[in-house]
Image (cartoon, one colour):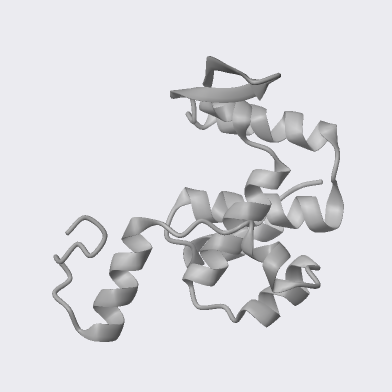
Amino acid sequence: MRLDFLRFYQPFFKNILEYLSVILFVFCSKILFNQVFDREIKEVCRKIGITSQVKKVKIVKNKTIETVVPKYSLISSHTGRRTFITLSLNQNIRPDILMKTTGHKKFETMKRYTKITDKYVNKEFSDKIKLSPDLDIINS
């Protein structure tokens, strides 16, 4: 399937990560959800330069196994789902609306997908309490 219809929405996203997460979410929720898609998205990420080396930690039988792999090899449809949920919550999309979109029945289940960054915490405090934008709440 071609992604031409998504080009219309591209100007609404701040960066390629947001755009890519929406593409991933559309595919994994509506169109294709299998190993073929995961293989294809890894190839797309490799081609656009998501190639930095990252440490992958796996625990097997109480032993920690660390390997270094290219970042694109860790990206999957599930990565897009998590990113979509986190970015949507960061953009103040109501959780009940987001749950309807993602198919979650319980907030606790959806909450596991979110990642609250230090940058987001600092922004929330700065926006709500009228603190200086340069103040770092987390690392103070």
